[in-house]
Image (cartoon, rainbow, N blue to C red; front, top):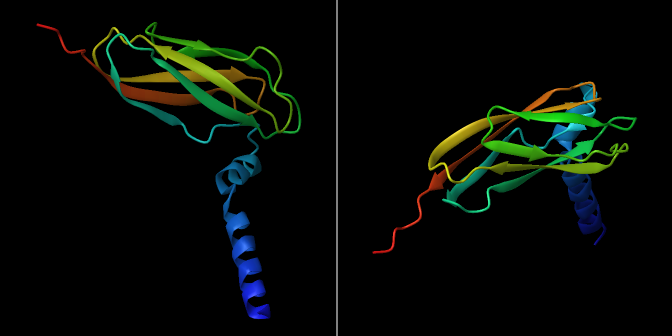
Length: 136
């Protein structure tokens, strides 16, 4: 019985030691704003559909972070972001709307400029807009 409890405890410690490794590494590197991914994939989306995608981030620094602006690599991608400061430990969302009237594959850059030490952060979005079936 004691062996099972010790084994379960060890497994729990091992599990929790692996949980936030990328975030911890990012923090050790002096980063203040953390994105769990730097590439976001829309997958296949229908033509003329809602091209909205949400990118989440976390403030892992010790002071509030303000997103000053978000710039995209072309006018076919329109971002929106929180204007209020993100407190330490807080999270935020950047919404990116891709123009789905443009059929075909795409890969665009999104640059997040902020008061964080690791600004700007470059994020890639990609996907494929597939044409809607024409009715006969």
